[in-house]
Length: 597
Image (cartoon, rainbow, N blue to C red; front, side, top):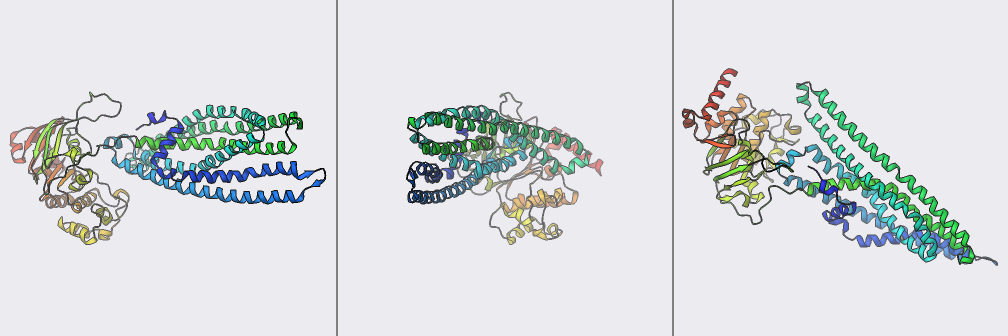
């Protein structure tokens, strides 16, 4: 997964798109800006007060104490008002920023769940987690300081510039002219800085993905004594990340000195020209002193912008990566005009289905995984998909569950084209039990209950009893309240699959797809699972993707796939005497099981 197109967009456009994705940020922004300007006005009062006090408070007759005191009182009131307004602007921006981050995080997470299986295959889960966590946190850090700086300091610069022009347009133009090259310097560095931080964020995601693999795969690495190899790979990724951040920091280090240099030059130019003009040029002593104060006020935000700019680029890089996810088309797309499925058990019709796994940027001449597959499965029939590795049986199961759409041909469920069925109804009527079912780090009850929200413990217990698994559940230390551990690590592989079968029973689907659900269980668990499957399959259309041919033997019908083509179709008792491919697979399986015993 990449964001090359988004990478070519300017920072302003990226920010604009980010605001569109989180509309809360722009709600009431006009009032927030007005409050920020009022806050900036409070900071401009001091230079004006100093100028008025020097020019009109000190006369040849002496100090006009009352006038100076009045100026002080007015200035104090203006400063207090400006402080309150600025505080209100900060609170408003903070609340809306958090609301916008919430919207963006929810939108990205929701979009990730709508992506096709191919997208999840191309992008490691650690990198996806990085985008939802680290990249969003980068934006949170920006809003906590950088966003405030752009709002408050930007308002201050605009207001101060207007006051400077009203004081003395010539000195104002000189100040702007001397400070102007700083904008080109910052812009020149900005491009390199943005690319550097984009690279740094990418490396950070790569490191997170690599570390996630090393940690979650610890058992496998220990079994093969391959920890040192994977650790070395993580070290290389960590070094690349470190180098990327050092480069970004080095580029950013040029920004602050640039602001200091141009600040000193601007003040020097203003003072020099002002002294040279003198009172003969209509510039009073108070006006010159006040103008110098205004110049410092004008330069303060520029100096701070040099510090904020690198944080802004980091935030833009993180936002660009988030938008890169949102730019990915969902797959498969939902139907424009969904059609309802008929009530009761559902039939399946597979017509001339062809499919190829094509990744982005590849040509259309990829080797097809399925070629012209045709089959009609009556409602309530139990079917086994059999074939050697790479035959296409798992792919056909994914197409039946609509994790992807065929490249050619059509699949109908209950007579309705699968592409016309709404996602919500499809997930309610069809359930997939994966080869390696995912369990959340919670109790057995929690891992069953989400399949049908609102289910009580009695409902869950009834589902266990319906599959005749009470005896197995009794072996669990706390019954339904037994913790399963992270990814079900406290359970055996077979026990995890039993939980997945009970979960499917809780969902109560009309079509059940079992993706090699008995591929890694012991003999006792297989007996329990076989009995549970018989009960679960009653009255349901069931498709089992089987490696253990004991599953195929119990099916009403067997579909044999080879090199993406359906080559045999029939029950076990007819396919074995036929002497075809299924007979070969069955003989090899019988031989292997005999050898094991």
